[in-house]
Image 1 (spheres, one colour):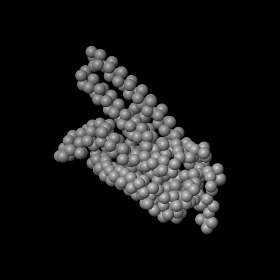
Image 2 (cartoon, helix red, strand yellow):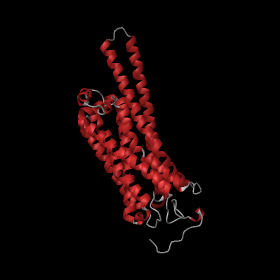
Image 3 (spheres, one colour):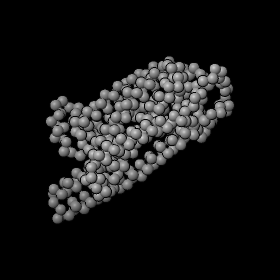
Image 4 (cartoon, one colour):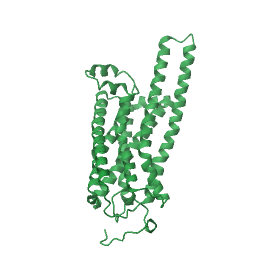
Length: 335
């Protein structure tokens, strides 16, 4: 970094692509430090305990349908172990992150885990979409070796996330004042990364969810027809009813996971895009940090969703529930 730094007096004098802060000290108010530290400390404890608990439940079952879920859980757990502690360290010791390795490492780690979460959600939704909307095609994969296919998919997710994080190093500035996405990364890189890597996939996922809900609705109509048919047996009606309930819960659970991710992270992504396309659209510094806190909260919401929507996870919270869990192993993933 140059020894002499000229701080621009107004935002119009800023020549680079990101958001530059006028105060090189960039100190937060004490009340924000206290509130953010307490909030993130509590959230982080629940993230680590909650996701470790989910991993334990998944490992005790080892069902193929939980492979992709386990990958998403690992990304949430790593967020609690790395991203949140690094943010707290940055919050109280901003000067430590003036160092290039410290700053670059923390930002690339955060990007790596966020990319992994997005790709895991995309993979989970795509797999369920194929299973519901194209069941025969899905069965052909299952017959080949579904476990191998899922394992390769998970490995591809993490490798792709690592390569994205590594590739982002090219677009990092070397003359930043404050270690943040807005200051360190090239603005055009952030813009296109969010458009192509976040907004576009989630538009595709929205289309998949609409088609899945339509397919589930058709399944429900077939169930009604079979109930009215005198030739259909009672066991057949019960089976169709169970299939419909399983499909409906499966789609709604995935939709809830996606909705929580959108609610927590999209404000952060939108502010980045706005800062690139509108140089005058500047929010207060604390507003950016509160929006980032909302994004970090996402890793806390997923274990709650699993507990609310999955019977096997709820059973694990009850004393002496191991026998009940063993009996529930015959249920589908969505149960």
